[in-house]
Image (cartoon, rainbow, N blue to C red; front, side, top):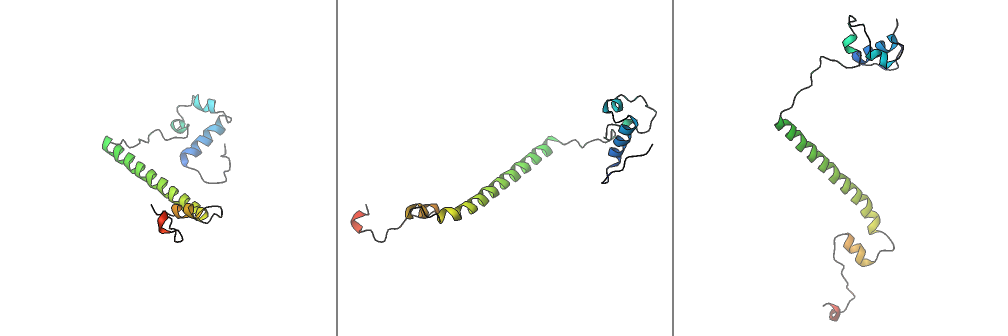
Length: 122
């Protein structure tokens, strides 16, 4: 039995899965129901290493990771807001239909009226 040619390299466990699929005529159900328990690849037939134990995190580590993720997401969202503001603020301040007051307020300034007589300042 020969392995099918692949365009890119794969992990050994995925190669075992491909081998098992070819052995069982490309039927995933047949791979699942495979009776050949004496086969050295039988435990790896699902494309995963059954002997790999994932690391168990303590509650403190889980909390610390959650806080780091929350801070990262907040930082990313602030960056996005700043980028969107920078992109849009240039076009808003130079929009031809905006009044003098709107342009000044969009820049965070108070509009100044140098031609307005002092009797209208209240």
